[in-house]
Amino acid sequence: MDNLIAQPWVQELIDFWLKAQEHYEELPWAHFDEWLSRFIFYYPLLMAYVWMLGGIIYYLRWERNRGNVLSDLPVLDEYPSVSILVPCYNEGENVRETIEYLLHQQYPNYEIIAINDGSKDNTLEILHELADQHSLIRVVNLASNQGKAVGLRTAALVSNSEILIGIDGDALLAPNATAWIVRHFLDDPNVGAVTGNPRIRNRSSLLGKIQVGEFSAIVGMIKRAQRSYGHIFTISGVIAGFRKTALHDVGYWSPDMVTEDIDISWKLQLAGWSIRFEPNALCWVLMPETLNGLWKQRSRWAQGGVEVLVRYFKPLLNWRSRGMWPLYLECCISLCWAFLVVGLLLAAPVQWIISEQPQEALEDLSPRWTSMLLCVTCLIQFAVSLAIDSSYEKRSGGSAKHYYWMIWYPIVYWMINVGTTIHGFFKALRKKRGQRAVWVTLDRGLRQK
Image 1 (cartoon, one colour):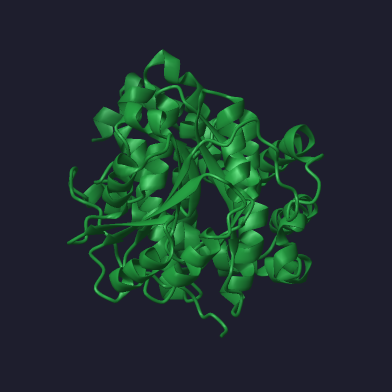
Image 2: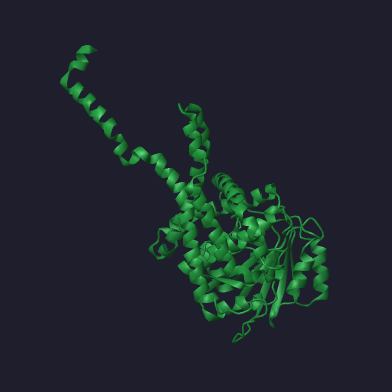
C-alpha cells in the first residue's frame, strides 16, 4: 500500500482531490440546498406578483367600466336559445332551491335540463315534480351512476340550443348570469367556453370564511391573470357556458377524467378554441367546511390536474399548442414546489438530530424576513383582490369583513394544498386509463338554517 501511495500519479490524484475540496464551496452545486430553499420561498412570492399584475391588467382592460354588477344587464343584439344543464347526484336537499333560482333568469329564451345520475335519494321525484309545474324544465334520468361527464354529454346531445350553461345541483345562479355569458359567444365566434364567477354560500366556520377570501383573492385573481396572459387552466365546474359546436369538435367531456372541468378546458384550448372569464356571471356554491371534506376535494382537484398534465403532454409538443406551454410549465413547477416543501419539512428534523450544533439547525426553521415578506405579499394580494372583487360580494354583505381571516391562509391552506397535491399526484399515477369517474358524496359545509 505504501508503495502505491508513493507513486507520482497517485500523489497527483490526491493533490487534485484536496484542491477540489478547497474550491468546492465556490462551485454552483455546492450550495444546492440553499438554492432549493430560496426557490421554495421565492416561487410563491414571484407567482403572487404575476397573478396580481395579470389581475390588474384584466381589471383595467375589461372590468373597470362595467358598473353595478348586481343590477346591470347587458343588452344583446339577439337572444339565442340557451340550455341550462343541471347534473344531479343525491341532491334532494338542494336541487329544489337551485331550480327555483334558475326559473328567475333574466333571459327570454332558455330551457332547463336536469339530469338525475342514478341518485339514491329523492332527487328524481323532486325533479319530476318541478317539471310538472314548469314547462321550462326537462328531466333526463340515468338509471345508474355514470359520472358528471356522461350526464353533461347526455344533456348536451338532447338539448335544443347551441349555447349551453352547466351548473351544479347545489348552486344558485344569479338572475343576470345567462345574459353575461351569452354576450361572449355573440362577440367572438372563436369562444368555445366562458367560465363564471363562483361565490361561497356557507361561511359559518373558519374554513368557510377563509374560502370566501380564497375564491376572490386566489381563484378570481388567477382566472383574471390567466385570461390576460392568453389561456385559462380550468373553467369553474360549478358555472360555465359552452358552445355546442366546440364541444362536438373535441368530443365533449371525457368520462374517465376525475375533473371534467379541467379536462374540457385543455381539450378546447388545444383545439384552438378560446376561453373567457366573466366575473358578472355569479353563482353561489356550497363548499366543504371540515378538514376531511376539504382534503378530499383538493385531492380530487390535484389528481385531475395531474391527469391532464399526463394525458396532454404529447399534444402539447405540437407547435400550434405553444400558447399553452407557459401554463403547462407553471403547473409542473408548482408540482415540483410541493414535493420540495415536503422534502424540506422532512429534512429539518433529521438535520436537527444529526447536527453537531442543534441550535443552528433550529435557527433554520425559525421565521426569517423571507417568511415575513411572503405573509406581507399575501396580504397585499388579498387587498388588491378585495379592491377588484368586493362589488361581487355585495349580496353577502361584503367581503371586507372576511379579510381578517386571510391571515390564516398561508398556514391552513398552503399546508393542506401541499399535502393534497402530492396525494393527488400519486392517485393520478395509480389510476387506470379509461376507468370511469363517477359521482361521490361530497361535504357541502355547515350551513346555517
